[in-house]
Image (tube, rainbow, N blue to C red):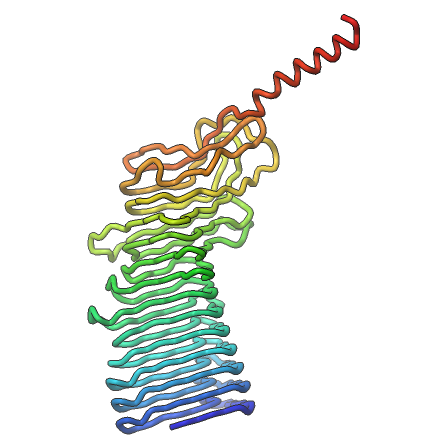
Length: 392
């Protein structure tokens, strides 16, 4: 079945379902191909679909390519919905336009088959951005923007067999949290160069690995008025070659990574390599001053540079107690996190110090800087000038 649409569609129902484009087949080798380049709006009192496609027999895949604006309104609404029931019936959705729904932006399910969503445009869900479920290769490749009003950006349900690999590959912007169902370490989240994961709340990563590549950014806070907590759980490996940033203009935010309760004894490993960088806000003042905090519930290897945005607009003071920045609840070396050079705040410089506490804490402490040694020289010079001018 082939459907090509380049004209605007409006579907409304006050007492039932509403579907902008509807396609369904009941036979072997009965594939569906839908191409849309226009505006589709749908609003129903029950179920609402901008584009809806379903096949019931084997070798009946679905391909949907959207280059238009699709909007679905209603209590149970889907921007794009594609479902296959039998083997060799892969589902592929490519979005180049804008898909928006009060419920789920894009819903893809392929029983006994692969399910892939490629997003080059914008997907905005109300309750959920994108849901992908498959019994073969399952994944999302994002070059555009994915989010939801609830911050539930992505839900991925991979198959249970070891060969059923699943992945999220991000070159664009994902805002919110992701949830991966299953306990298979085959799952991989690749945040590629130029990719931005605006992480919020708690992401469940299916006991897999998160790879923040060189040029990639994981940003975990955006409101300086609130002390935000963001976490990655059910995580076996976090490999960082890019930037992890908690910076939003105020200290007090927390980012936690952990293997979680369903790790079956595995220990999270955090590996910093390449240009691995951690950015935090910190008030560089006296004892009791605060910073953003990165908590690693696992082992740490490699090296990660710390970059600090000092929110104290006045001079620093002596602080030998320290301002905690990184907590590690596992094996770690004292040089795993480092400052490129001490931070000059006037008379005092702040540097990063490691304190073993069974595991380890990295804290910012201050000591007399170069400015403190210049002050007596300035006072002496001023006195000499006064004495000379007074002929004493």
